[in-house]
Length: 241
Image 1 (cartoon, one colour):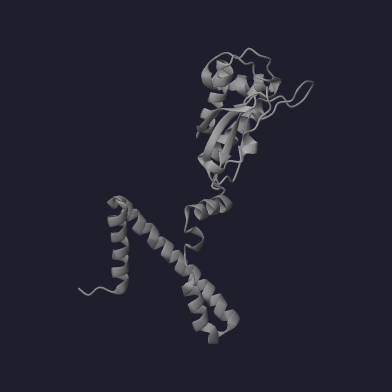
Image 2: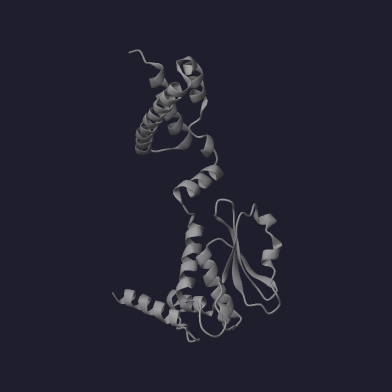
Protein backbone atom coordinates (compact mmCIF):
# COMPACT_ATOMS: atom_id res chain seq x y z
CA UNK A 1 0.00 0.00 0.00
CA UNK A 2 1.44 3.31 -1.06
CA UNK A 3 1.33 6.09 1.52
CA UNK A 4 0.86 9.75 0.65
CA UNK A 5 2.96 12.47 2.28
CA UNK A 6 0.22 13.61 4.65
CA UNK A 7 -0.08 10.14 6.20
CA UNK A 8 3.67 10.02 6.76
CA UNK A 9 3.65 13.50 8.30
CA UNK A 10 0.73 12.62 10.57
CA UNK A 11 2.31 9.37 11.73
CA UNK A 12 5.66 11.08 12.36
CA UNK A 13 3.92 13.76 14.42
CA UNK A 14 2.14 11.22 16.63
CA UNK A 15 5.21 9.00 16.90
CA UNK A 16 7.28 11.95 18.13
CA UNK A 17 4.71 12.53 20.88
CA UNK A 18 4.80 8.88 21.91
CA UNK A 19 8.58 8.57 21.93
CA UNK A 20 9.60 11.92 23.41
CA UNK A 21 6.93 12.85 25.92
CA UNK A 22 5.77 9.58 27.49
CA UNK A 23 2.12 10.29 26.60
CA UNK A 24 -0.52 7.57 27.04
CA UNK A 25 -2.31 6.08 24.02
CA UNK A 26 -5.65 7.58 25.10
CA UNK A 27 -3.97 10.99 25.27
CA UNK A 28 -2.48 10.41 21.78
CA UNK A 29 -5.99 9.64 20.48
CA UNK A 30 -7.30 12.86 22.01
CA UNK A 31 -4.40 14.90 20.61
CA UNK A 32 -4.97 13.39 17.13
CA UNK A 33 -8.67 14.28 17.28
CA UNK A 34 -8.10 17.82 18.56
CA UNK A 35 -5.29 18.47 16.09
CA UNK A 36 -7.52 17.36 13.21
CA UNK A 37 -10.22 19.78 14.36
CA UNK A 38 -7.67 22.57 14.77
CA UNK A 39 -6.30 22.04 11.25
CA UNK A 40 -9.84 21.98 9.80
CA UNK A 41 -10.66 25.29 11.49
CA UNK A 42 -7.37 26.82 10.34
CA UNK A 43 -8.08 25.73 6.75
CA UNK A 44 -11.53 27.30 6.92
CA UNK A 45 -10.08 30.57 8.18
CA UNK A 46 -7.31 30.33 5.57
CA UNK A 47 -9.83 29.81 2.74
CA UNK A 48 -12.06 32.70 3.83
CA UNK A 49 -9.14 35.07 4.37
CA UNK A 50 -7.54 34.15 1.04
CA UNK A 51 -10.87 34.59 -0.74
CA UNK A 52 -11.30 38.07 0.74
CA UNK A 53 -7.69 39.00 -0.12
CA UNK A 54 -8.15 37.85 -3.72
CA UNK A 55 -11.39 39.84 -4.06
CA UNK A 56 -9.61 42.93 -2.71
CA UNK A 57 -6.27 42.66 -4.52
CA UNK A 58 -7.31 40.80 -7.64
CA UNK A 59 -6.46 37.41 -9.17
CA UNK A 60 -3.08 38.63 -10.33
CA UNK A 61 -1.91 38.62 -6.70
CA UNK A 62 -3.05 35.05 -5.92
CA UNK A 63 0.47 33.61 -5.76
CA UNK A 64 1.74 36.35 -3.43
CA UNK A 65 -1.33 36.07 -1.18
CA UNK A 66 -0.91 32.31 -0.84
CA UNK A 67 2.78 32.71 -0.04
CA UNK A 68 2.05 35.24 2.69
CA UNK A 69 -0.63 33.05 4.26
CA UNK A 70 1.48 29.89 4.07
CA UNK A 71 4.37 31.60 5.87
CA UNK A 72 2.26 32.33 8.96
CA UNK A 73 2.76 30.06 11.98
CA UNK A 74 -0.23 28.84 13.98
CA UNK A 75 1.64 29.30 17.26
CA UNK A 76 3.71 32.43 16.79
CA UNK A 77 2.08 34.10 19.80
CA UNK A 78 2.17 30.94 21.93
CA UNK A 79 5.71 29.59 21.61
CA UNK A 80 6.72 30.06 25.25
CA UNK A 81 5.00 29.57 28.60
CA UNK A 82 5.13 33.32 29.23
CA UNK A 83 3.47 34.08 25.89
CA UNK A 84 0.78 31.44 26.49
CA UNK A 85 0.02 32.64 30.02
CA UNK A 86 -0.18 36.24 28.82
CA UNK A 87 -2.48 35.30 25.95
CA UNK A 88 -4.74 33.18 28.16
CA UNK A 89 -5.00 35.98 30.72
CA UNK A 90 -5.64 38.70 28.13
CA UNK A 91 -8.11 36.85 25.91
CA UNK A 92 -9.68 34.23 28.21
CA UNK A 93 -9.49 36.13 31.51
CA UNK A 94 -7.70 33.15 33.11
CA UNK A 95 -6.16 33.61 36.54
CA UNK A 96 -3.39 31.67 38.23
CA UNK A 97 -4.11 29.84 41.49
CA UNK A 98 -2.25 32.60 43.32
CA UNK A 99 -4.39 35.30 41.72
CA UNK A 100 -7.52 33.35 42.64
CA UNK A 101 -6.33 33.09 46.25
CA UNK A 102 -5.58 36.81 46.40
CA UNK A 103 -9.02 37.60 44.96
CA UNK A 104 -10.54 35.33 47.62
CA UNK A 105 -8.72 37.18 50.40
CA UNK A 106 -9.69 40.57 48.96
CA UNK A 107 -13.30 39.41 48.78
CA UNK A 108 -13.15 38.26 52.39
CA UNK A 109 -11.72 41.60 53.48
CA UNK A 110 -14.41 43.43 51.56
CA UNK A 111 -17.09 41.46 53.43
CA UNK A 112 -15.78 41.91 56.98
CA UNK A 113 -13.74 45.10 57.09
CA UNK A 114 -14.74 48.28 58.85
CA UNK A 115 -15.33 50.87 56.13
CA UNK A 116 -17.64 53.48 57.66
CA UNK A 117 -18.34 55.22 60.93
CA UNK A 118 -16.00 56.50 63.59
CA UNK A 119 -12.62 55.02 64.41
CA UNK A 120 -9.78 53.58 62.36
CA UNK A 121 -10.78 52.07 59.03
CA UNK A 122 -9.59 48.63 58.02
CA UNK A 123 -6.75 48.01 55.59
CA UNK A 124 -5.65 44.94 53.71
CA UNK A 125 -3.24 42.71 55.63
CA UNK A 126 -1.79 41.43 52.36
CA UNK A 127 0.35 43.51 50.00
CA UNK A 128 0.87 42.25 46.44
CA UNK A 129 3.94 43.15 44.36
CA UNK A 130 3.61 42.14 40.70
CA UNK A 131 6.00 41.47 37.79
CA UNK A 132 9.05 40.53 39.85
CA UNK A 133 11.74 38.84 37.75
CA UNK A 134 13.55 36.62 40.27
CA UNK A 135 13.67 35.92 44.00
CA UNK A 136 17.25 37.17 44.09
CA UNK A 137 16.11 40.54 42.75
CA UNK A 138 13.20 41.25 45.07
CA UNK A 139 12.57 45.00 45.41
CA UNK A 140 13.85 45.51 48.96
CA UNK A 141 11.67 48.57 49.59
CA UNK A 142 8.64 46.28 49.82
CA UNK A 143 10.27 44.34 52.66
CA UNK A 144 10.99 47.42 54.76
CA UNK A 145 8.77 48.29 57.73
CA UNK A 146 8.95 50.75 60.60
CA UNK A 147 9.96 49.69 64.10
CA UNK A 148 6.78 48.77 65.95
CA UNK A 149 4.76 48.41 62.74
CA UNK A 150 2.19 45.60 62.94
CA UNK A 151 3.02 42.43 60.97
CA UNK A 152 1.40 41.81 57.58
CA UNK A 153 1.99 39.67 54.49
CA UNK A 154 3.74 40.77 51.30
CA UNK A 155 3.44 38.52 48.23
CA UNK A 156 5.76 38.76 45.22
CA UNK A 157 4.35 37.58 41.88
CA UNK A 158 6.22 36.79 38.68
CA UNK A 159 5.15 38.01 35.24
CA UNK A 160 2.68 35.13 34.88
CA UNK A 161 0.98 35.92 38.19
CA UNK A 162 2.45 32.96 40.09
CA UNK A 163 3.92 33.29 43.58
CA UNK A 164 7.67 33.77 43.67
CA UNK A 165 7.60 34.00 47.45
CA UNK A 166 5.70 35.63 50.28
CA UNK A 167 6.91 37.03 53.57
CA UNK A 168 5.46 38.02 56.90
CA UNK A 169 7.06 41.35 57.77
CA UNK A 170 6.73 43.95 60.50
CA UNK A 171 8.51 45.75 63.32
CA UNK A 172 11.35 46.70 61.00
CA UNK A 173 12.24 43.16 59.91
CA UNK A 174 11.35 40.12 57.85
CA UNK A 175 9.78 37.67 60.30
CA UNK A 176 8.96 34.66 58.12
CA UNK A 177 9.74 34.23 54.42
CA UNK A 178 9.73 31.98 51.37
CA UNK A 179 6.21 30.51 51.65
CA UNK A 180 4.52 29.95 48.30
CA UNK A 181 0.84 29.64 49.21
CA UNK A 182 -1.04 32.88 49.91
CA UNK A 183 -3.56 31.33 52.29
CA UNK A 184 -0.78 29.57 54.21
CA UNK A 185 0.95 32.93 54.54
CA UNK A 186 -2.13 34.39 56.23
CA UNK A 187 -2.23 31.50 58.70
CA UNK A 188 1.47 32.08 59.37
CA UNK A 189 0.66 35.74 59.97
CA UNK A 190 -1.90 34.76 62.62
CA UNK A 191 0.72 32.41 64.12
CA UNK A 192 3.13 35.34 64.46
CA UNK A 193 0.53 37.25 66.47
CA UNK A 194 -0.01 34.17 68.67
CA UNK A 195 3.70 33.45 69.22
CA UNK A 196 4.59 37.03 70.10
CA UNK A 197 1.35 37.49 72.07
CA UNK A 198 0.30 40.49 69.99
CA UNK A 199 -3.19 41.91 69.68
CA UNK A 200 -4.39 42.38 66.14
CA UNK A 201 -4.16 46.06 65.16
CA UNK A 202 -7.50 47.63 64.26
CA UNK A 203 -6.50 47.96 60.62
CA UNK A 204 -6.15 44.15 60.23
CA UNK A 205 -8.29 42.86 63.07
CA UNK A 206 -11.46 42.05 61.15
CA UNK A 207 -9.80 39.88 58.50
CA UNK A 208 -7.49 38.09 60.93
CA UNK A 209 -10.33 37.67 63.40
CA UNK A 210 -12.63 35.96 60.89
CA UNK A 211 -9.78 33.65 59.84
CA UNK A 212 -8.97 32.89 63.47
CA UNK A 213 -12.54 31.90 64.21
CA UNK A 214 -13.41 30.04 61.02
CA UNK A 215 -10.09 28.69 59.69
CA UNK A 216 -8.35 27.94 62.99
CA UNK A 217 -11.40 27.36 65.18
CA UNK A 218 -10.38 29.74 67.96
CA UNK A 219 -13.14 32.11 69.08
CA UNK A 220 -12.42 35.73 68.17
CA UNK A 221 -13.22 38.01 71.13
CA UNK A 222 -11.97 41.43 70.03
CA UNK A 223 -14.32 44.14 68.77
CA UNK A 224 -16.21 43.14 65.62
CA UNK A 225 -17.60 45.33 62.89
CA UNK A 226 -21.23 45.01 61.81
CA UNK A 227 -19.96 43.59 58.52
CA UNK A 228 -17.94 40.99 60.42
CA UNK A 229 -20.97 39.89 62.44
CA UNK A 230 -23.19 39.64 59.35
CA UNK A 231 -20.62 37.64 57.42
CA UNK A 232 -19.94 35.31 60.35
CA UNK A 233 -23.69 34.69 60.67
CA UNK A 234 -23.81 33.73 56.98
CA UNK A 235 -20.92 31.27 57.49
CA UNK A 236 -22.67 29.84 60.53
CA UNK A 237 -25.93 29.30 58.66
CA UNK A 238 -24.16 27.69 55.73
CA UNK A 239 -22.27 25.37 58.08
CA UNK A 240 -25.51 24.22 59.71
CA UNK A 241 -27.37 23.59 56.45
